[in-house]
Image (cartoon, rainbow, N blue to C red; front, top):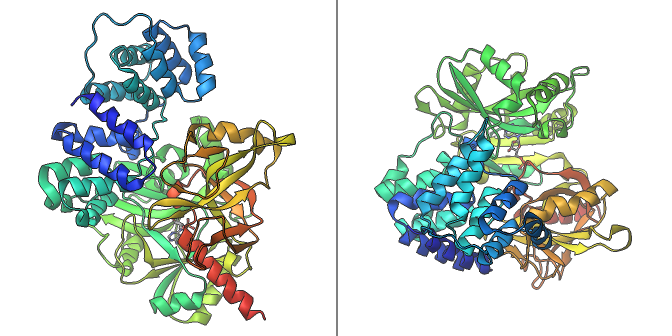
Length: 585
Ligand code: AMP
């Protein structure tokens, strides 16, 4: 398929602010795509070339791309750099530069999807000596044959900033509509949740239809999307809802999915990135267990103070990147303990359809407690008093709260439901709750904040419609360093217009695509006529606002925008708050 056909649709997707229209455009694109190109088109639309867990990523240095652009267009490098400074988006610069190029190539061949994909893939895989030159050649080869519009998207891809704004769920909707019916989207989503690979899902559904999708299974060394929890306000409600349930300590750390075979171990994050290299101490602990069959377990990694044995703030490990020696030093200084809480694969058997209680038993058989590897502390009860005591113990131990799990529930990949319910300490301390909100806009700073942002427009995630709705302007809790960082850290998410997935009545000076998540502490929730979160839910013509929000200083780089606090959670908190206020009078 001609690449021109694809980017034409991308331009239209970029221009729309309506999600439904976006889906329809995608359906049109998928229908026009021959089966052989389908997975590649899906990956490109996601802004990547492989599923995340494979760890094959594009991200060429902008300087290098500028050099190639200069070469391909005959423009001076300085000129291109100035354009870049003006526009802030190298894709737009490429578009303009190619359009104005002095020396048109003598002969150029129209780009195909396969050609673009293959070259990008080769660029991402190149490493080692001489790789820079080879990457430059591969990119020049594309740019000298590209139309201005094609160049825009190619450049955005290679610098790792494609960001069309098409959510995975939109692609799932489009795949269902194209190859089955809209009503079948859940089956498509299931296949995605199990495989974490939309390209694979597209390949299978195109070749074998829905039946084929049902055969997509859990596989070792391919992470499954994590099961998620709902939240409730009181332990009483939880017990009422679940009856006898397993209560586990809720550890505040990093979720880790460990894939283990007798000869190899791989670790994945909640976002399905390969984090094997970041936790040598977990690998060592798991190796000592000599697991003899293919096994997948899940747990939470928490840093422990080597001196006191107490938990340390999660930030100590949240960014264990960088050189190997640094990782090893940190693993010694702040070693983590992995508290395992689930077992998903055991030998040949996929345990995800099995009930919680069986999976827990399997977990306890496979994982022997050893240094650095433990089981989550658990108690099975239907007694509220006992649950409250257990909660106090959890807090005492340095945990955030409890996770209640239905004894008979399967492991539902990628789903948030009431099979798992979290209960956190913040609810008991009236409104000292922290929430995680997504940056969707900014207001230019004045006075001391000139040159940076005076305040940010923050949104909660509305799962039901897959959009982000505003809930406060955030202007406090920023130190000088943070203020300095904002424009740079948010640059990539900047948009000219309101992004399609943002719902706002307020018009900020700058829009951002929902990408960056910040932790915010608020004093209370109030009904608000200007914010769109939970619109009409409590009072018609009003939404919910966070009052006196303050940035805690914690960038939730571990959370994607869809992991932010949801509108539903805000509503739940608001209702809890009302109950408490009533109770105190
Ligand atoms: P939250 O991030 O607040 O939505 O809480 C869900 C997260 O709690 C999960 O993704 C895990 O990373 C973490 N967690 C901590 N302890 C447990 C546990 N015992 N069972 C399941 N998840 C846990």
